[in-house]
Image (tube, rainbow, N blue to C red; front, side, top):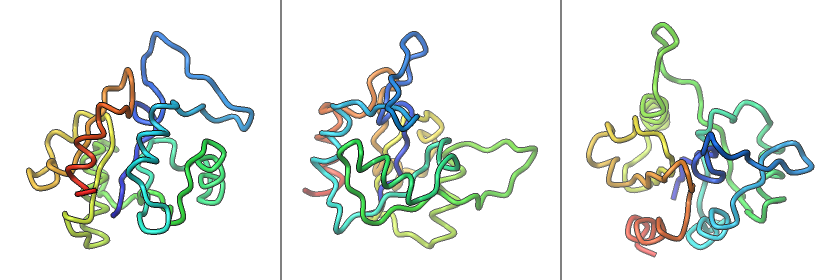
Length: 155
């Protein structure tokens, strides 16, 4: 399975009224609930992550793998969302970015899971929208999202 994974609003809260804790490596501390929920459904040897976060260009793939590993998430197959969207006045949404990647890689709907808090993803075609776990930005990925994930994954 290929997971399009966001950070803000998924692995950490995106509540503007609360500060996000930083780890000694200079990046955010992931929510314990997000880590536990993700580890419940993700199979490191089998699944892949495409990091769709706006933070994706801050680090190399090797550095991202270490950041995730240091937060108790092992990901063997890790890539970054590519910039494949034709930019018109530099305005495009997360929906556009993810759709561009899906087309660019010729991915099949049934091999995709999208975990994000970006509301533009509500405009995905229905087949892809059924593969979306839209988290609350104030809490991120939690056990509340687990039922939806298990249903999508048949796990």
